Length: 171
Image 1: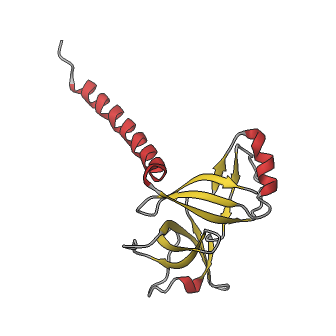
Image 2: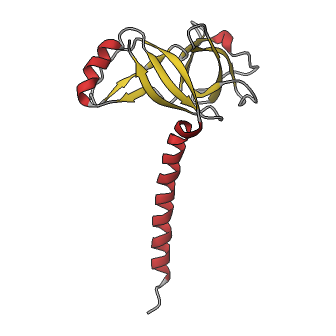
């Protein structure tokens, strides 16, 4: 018996769905495999959330930047990808030095998206996709208490600027 076109179409649809899932997974873990490690300073965040889960929300020192860090000629739009150039301070913590629209050819940088541009205060809010840290339920309360002060996040950066959160240092 020869299979008809419906079987092939169903098989192709299943393979397409699996390949999309695999591509998403590989994109998320690629910075862990090939990335360089940086340390980013977190800033205190309001840990209260409506539906608590096994994660804590993080805000970063590089998450809200003065508008002067962007010297581009045109206005930034919400959800637009940007690249934040990083430089290390004396303690090995990476800080922002500049915001650009094109992927830099050299230097260390992290890719983010514009969440908001506050015109009154001239500040840029940027999200990097590493604003949630998942942990076992019994560790969450302790992490929330520690994150009311400053903590350090260890982040893997891929060559294209994509970031993956590796660990939190709360001491």
